Image (spheres, one colour):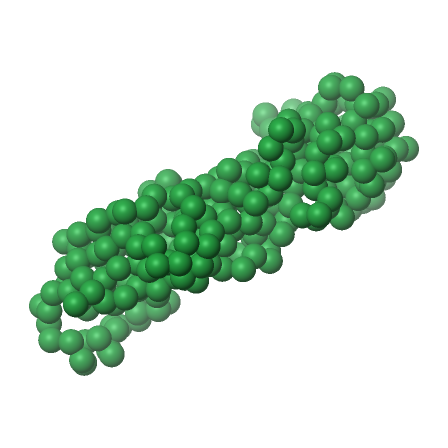
Length: 281
């Protein structure tokens, strides 16, 4: 966990939610009231966000005591209790919604990721996330992918070169895009991995002739074409496939021998896991 980044996220989120006070709790619960609450699981899936929840409680009130029973990455089912938190009741309720919002989404992402990871068992293919994330939540969503057993792609625009179709078209072609990139990195004295997207076998051939990249993204290839492309590359570059790949056909794509399959749906269209924080009498 990147504590500095996470703590800033928590403070920003609390400022958005709490403002000048949780007036409902302040109005109804006498100051100093002590309480206990449990994190109750209401769905099947993979739990994610426990470590984050602990940090949220700590930021709000370091005196809150959290007892963890189920850790991140574990399979859960309805009626499981992931943890209990004990201490100032007003502060428990101040944390409630932020904890639930984060954990429910992270658990949904981890669950979807684990489903795909399980489908890829026995192959050498790993599942990647993408930049199709919720603004402001990218770190949490990519964290959840790792909890689910997936692999993070680049975090943003700054930590890797990914030459996509629009870059190629604006550059004037495959060779020009690669040569421009190499010159830019040299001028800026930067060392970044270079990946390039190809849309067909003709573009792939141009990349193979030009070289100068680390990974080739084979976009919207059907499984037969993907197999031909992977065979043509023959281990000279890391390979990644994306586009048109679903739960139903991902195993077929993996069987083509591709190193990675990137799945935007891991983060852009998942169903959150139902969780609740219930007071314990």
